[in-house]
Image 1: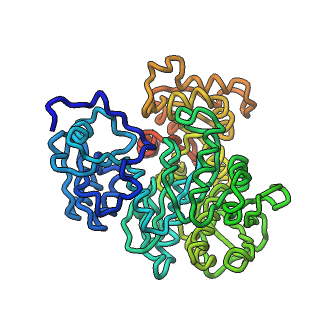
Image 2: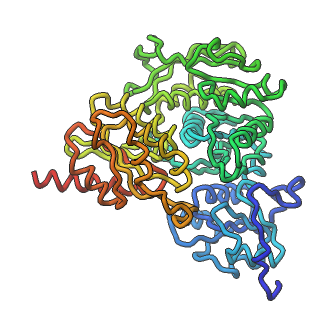
Length: 524
């Protein structure tokens, strides 16, 4: 190892491939070290490699449940990230959260170790699996969790016990499953992260695209480049592409597909095919959301359904059938997510009726319309929504689920740049609620110093001319998140629903709100 660290020259490129990527196989990885092995995305990859016979180790800043799980499997985990942790290592796996001056990166480069982004590992695993990826600006976690849940609960033969790597836990009738699992079946379900372009590496059997809306322009530069990345991803699918016809961006991707890819595409939509126009020869699945048949009781479907519809499958998919679906999770957007998952399961070889029944027992992914509790008649719900479209879908679902309730929202914007670009859009969607407090911005990878004028007030100021009933006082900025949570709790009434909304640490405020409600109740 050189005496002089070369970290100044290290450039970590998320979309770069190792020099031997074209011939790389699992048995060539050697001793493989994961930096941040306890992370949701990293731990499952480490476990899968371990199950495949790779010599795996790793490091993390602190011990947690995932680290303890890996240690129980016999994987060595170092607490703290130090150069000596990678002595004798052949391959180092990193994620986009790791900086180029990380001591383990520096030491690995100086020692000549292979550097692999986590997406390269996932791409490598897809080579020996029937892989299904789920990409899109919104709905990735719920759709991939739904598909994993369907396979876990209804898969037989090689469809049973799938591997999956998704961004949230899976809530089903028998409890909660972790978002990562190294299964013994042939299927691998994975979220395809488009934020840094790494999904360009994947060659799945089935590529699901839930929607395409301009996002992550700090990486792509333009909306056109962002959309083209999805076109390229779709062309990498070795079997089918499944796209949502209710989204203009996804339709644009469909119409950009080359004939061979389009011939194996499936488009699903709540609209009639004539309303979609040209679908480039794709198979069409209609989500009949208004069908009376969907509302009829079925002995083999859950009785607590809050979203019912019928899927009309064409002859090209499982010989054609009308499949009733009854979901426990609310919202038309979840009807679309479930449809994509059922189509993917059917294309893998499952009976669509079995897939639909299993979907009906899905209770949601973590932080997706997750009910945290109810105190004194006030329901507290947590949701990960952090883009205007997601917030709009969430509040539409809230109105369907709680039609008579006063909807109160504690919203934490995610990223200064996103808040700046979409301030008016956020305000417009938040206007679907009755009472809104916007709190401090979760910076993630950004710095307030680079956006000095962007604060919680940015969204509130953008709401000035948005019609609302009542006209005054429906939205305010309270930078102190804990104070804002207490304010919403104190002014709530029985029958109200309070949502904590955002991708940051706003999730911690659910318990604060419930605690205030309990204390308030004790005093009454």
